[in-house]
Structure formats: C-alpha cells, structure tokens
Length: 605
Image 1 (cartoon, one colour):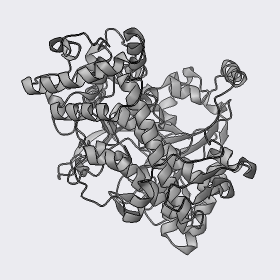
Image 2 (cartoon, rainbow, N blue to C red):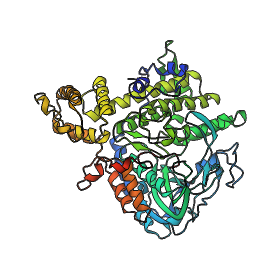
Image 3 (cartoon, helix red, strand yellow):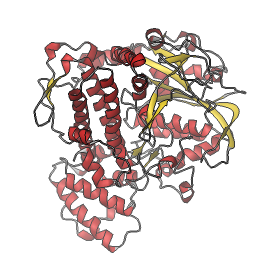
Image 4 (cartoon, rainbow, N blue to C red):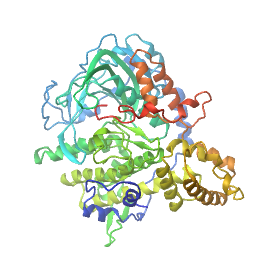
C-alpha cells in the first residue's frame, strides 16, 4: 500500500492538488532500492554499549554556570548586522543576535523534566535554586549563553508565506554534554524578534503546558521529538484571541525551554533560495554546516562505499549517493521524515500544522500547536480549527503532506544546484518506500500478527472509522483476544466489549467476521497468548496525552496549582505501563471535552 493508496482509502478528496503529475510519477514506483551496500547503521557492539553505560556512570552533574557552551551556529553562519527586534526582512543572514525581553513578575517554576535535564548533565538540585525561574524566563542571562532568533520561511497551508522565522522563540545557544552530544536550548515566548511581524513574541500558559507535556510524552512513546526541559510562568498577563473571533481575553503568560540537537527546519533553507541569486549561496553554506554537525557520517562517506541505487523509473537509471553528499543528505532527510510520520500514524497523533517551517531537518516532531491524539478513530480528524475548511492536515493526509513538504525541500536544493532532478525524485521515492516499510512493521506489531496482512488491517481501520472506536483503547484491549479458533462466534466480541460501544446487530456481525479472520491469523503464529499480549502492550500505549487531560492540568495551573501538570508528566513518562491507581487517565473523554478550545484549537494555541 503506497502513500497515495493510503490516502485514497482513508481521506476525503483533497481540496488541493497535493502532488504534481511529475511528482506522482516519481513516487508511485515504490520499489525497494537496489544497493551495493545498506545505508542502515550497524547495531551497536557490546563494547560500544558498555562504553556508553560507563560514560553515563561517570557523568558529573553540572551547575548552570558550569554548562559547556558551544556556539557553532553563531560562529559559522552569517548574522544579521542589526541586533534590535524591530520587525523587518532580514537579508543575507541565518539569524539575528538579540536577548530575551519578555516581562516577568515573580516567575514560578511550573514543572521540569528529569530525563531532559540528564541530556544536559544538569544537576537536579539546580531546579531548586530561587533564581532558576529568572534564568529560564530570560529575565537573567545565563553565563555563557549567546542568544539569537533564527531566520526561516515556509509554505503555510500549501502557499509560500515568505519570511517567518522565530517570532517568539530565542535560542540561548548550544551545550556539549559529557558524550559530546550537541543540544540547543531555546526559550519559547521570550519576547519580540525581527520575525514577530505584528505579534508580541509571548506565549500563554495554556499553549506552553501543552507543548511542555507533549514534547516529553512523544519521546517516551518512542517518537523522535524536540524535548522540553522546564516550564516557567511569567507572572504577567498576555492578551490572546484564541478563536480569532474578535473576543480577546487576558491569559497567564509562560515560557517553555525547548531542547533539541537542532531547530533547523525545511524553511531555514527555503528562505534563502526564495530570495534569488544574492542569497542562493546561503543554501549551500547552511547545508554544509548541517551535514558537518548533524550528519557527519555523510561528510565522512567514502566513494569506496559505492552506494548506487536503481531509481525504480522505467529507464532503470542509477543514482550514486557517494558522488554527491547533498543527494545522500536529502535521501536521509526524506527517510527520517517518512519514518517519523509512520510513527505518528501508528500512535494516532495529528500534528495539525504541517507547514514546511514546522518540518525538522532532523526528522523530529517540532512546534506543538493545535496537535491532537485520536480519540474516536476518524481519518479526517484535524485538531486545528484553521484547517477545518479543507482539512489539508487531517490525520489521513499526513503521509502525503510529508511527501509534499519533502518535494518543496528538494526544489530548494535543486535551485541551489546541490542536487539534480533525478536525485530529487529518488529522495521522494525513498520517502514512499520508507514510509510503507515502517508503517507496515508498526501496524503488524500493533495487531500482534506473524506477518503484515494488508486486507485485515484495512478492514479493521474501516470498521473502527464506521463505529468511531477509540484508537488507543482499542489497540490496548486487542491484546486480550485469544488465538483460539474454537471460540464460538457469539463469544468472540467479549474481550472487546469495553471498546465496542453502542453497536447494533449488523455492526456486531461485521466485527465478528473480522475477529474470526484475525483469530485465525493469530493461530498460525505459534506464539502463546501471554507472549503476544506482552509484546503488543509494549507498542500499544495505555496512556496518551489526550487534549482533555491537558485542559484539566491547564485549568489548575491557571489558578496556581501545578500538581496536575507534574502528575501528567510522570504519567506520560511511562505510557506503556499499567500504573495502578492511574486508570482514570485512560478513560474516554467526558462530554465537556468536545467543546471548542479543548478538542480543537487554533494556530494561536
């Protein structure tokens, strides 16, 4: 099942022609590439694993003033000569140097992530410092930091929007940890930048709680993502028109400290190509920087590795990735993006705003705005009120949108003469292959099947859509089904009665028919029910960050009670565990959860 057929099966007819005819020709031939040698990295050796464990044990917790700052982005890339925050077009530069400027009044630490702190080797006692909220609200400068806002552009809802940039995010700099890993710290909601346009550069507690929690939730679900170190309330009010309906209100302000190895996006390269010959060279400069620091294996790739691939086109032409590092780079970006979106589809996550400026060059989930996990399974679900007219970014469209975005990125690299058309088409072909490879593996594991069964899985998703079955709870409960073909038809639905609610006779018959086929398939695996349940429960979470759970924590935080935010953080750190006593967090959303502002949000969120 290719990306195109995935959409044909589940999504409404798109209101926009997502793929041009030439791109469709480039992506329908999803043949597995023929390679002289696999590009996949070998599994780590026992020695390397032992070394990693040793390094972890030798890690010395650091105080804030002892963090090992390094500023490769600022040091190696061209800067805006101005350092003010006046909105303007920033030309011939990748960033603008400026400091956080958000006003604070007795800022408070709302919550912090221990696993994220460990990435930085940061001593946990540092979060108890009375001045910690001042540092991470931007009110007091961190020793060694060199803050800046990044310049980028992007396609928004399929239309080129020109310069966008970090309108309310300010990167403090890069930290090298004890394992020589590079991590950027970024304050979101830290004040105006030249890229703020007509906005105030601030963030509200509502959206910041959501980003903080979901960043960590996604990581613990095993999905590549930016991380969140901490969340600080500013003590100031921020005016927001949440529904863009002319009824603004004051909300509590907040700042979340995001952590990632890089915040570079597709749009970081697009903006320079869009400005023509004068800035086109910056695409190569930025690409070289990115490969050097974030894809060093490509920089060090030897021609002796002979990575040549058939393209899958009728002429059986060959792409040699060792002859052009930029071609190898874009192929890896395409594959990382495809793998990421396959993971989203597996867990039922809908990003909501898949503009090219929200596409990480590292294949990370980035920029948590009006996101949402599926409750009742609806392929057309979008959590973004701005997306409602065309549902461009609905759940079922995400794989195709990912491909469309990769196509825009390859166009940028072609404009800069870094790759040719054949290499661009091959990258998109690899996107399709990688997406379907990963998606099939994920769905096979979710169902506990011995091998991928397209017809069985398609029929299941159709049934779930018809009956609006809760996506997370269904797959978690499915592990209770026994691989016993002697079970009478009238008893087959018993293990699923808690998730198949209010279905009539005709629908019961449809589900019984599906279960008979499913049980027969399970019976051929030779795996015990207990083993299968254990393996299925490791890939089907019991707990996800449902929007109504976020809203409950937000409501409490807005009156100064941060315990529910902290409780939810601990919950989502172990999404696959039963966690006795926490069962209420796995319940279906209550009726109030379907009101505007909870189940669906706007881009201002």
